Amino acid sequence: MSEQADDTGSDDGRTWTAEGWTARVQKNEHDEGWAVTMTRDGDAEPVLTTHWTMGRDKKSPKPLGVYDFRTLLKGARDVLTRHEAQARQSRHRTVSVTDDTGAGVRVDLDIAADEDDPHAVLSAWSDAGEQLGERRVAPNFKLTAAAATKWVTSDYGDA
Image (tube, rainbow, N blue to C red; front, side):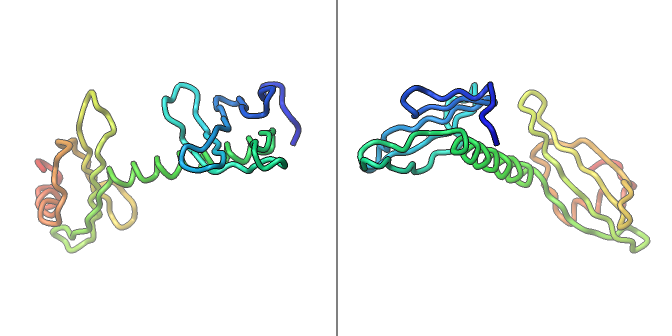
């Protein structure tokens, strides 16, 4: 991997900026060593903070290079990916019920991540993956087996 034109390191080897991110090596506040932070442009707080290696003199930090930056960038993006997946999972609920004919129905509740228009979407799915119904509900709707059964047996009317 070669150093790209948009990659810029600092003269002292403690800062690297590229692809909308900044890596900064700084004194670790909690011990005698060094730490490196990865901060996305526009964010107030770093996405990733980790221990950084001491240099050969055992006093100053190892200089930050393009390969170090690439490794840190991958780690920071992984942290964001896991955080986003956890956030999606915390806004999703599922229960399985049966309809009037005895067929299985999966009912999902997905809370919208929208502060300006708080709501959730209730949806029903057949075992074959066909959507059977969908309805907008309040974001505090409690999805229980009883509530899902009532909605399914009402032919996807009022929830």
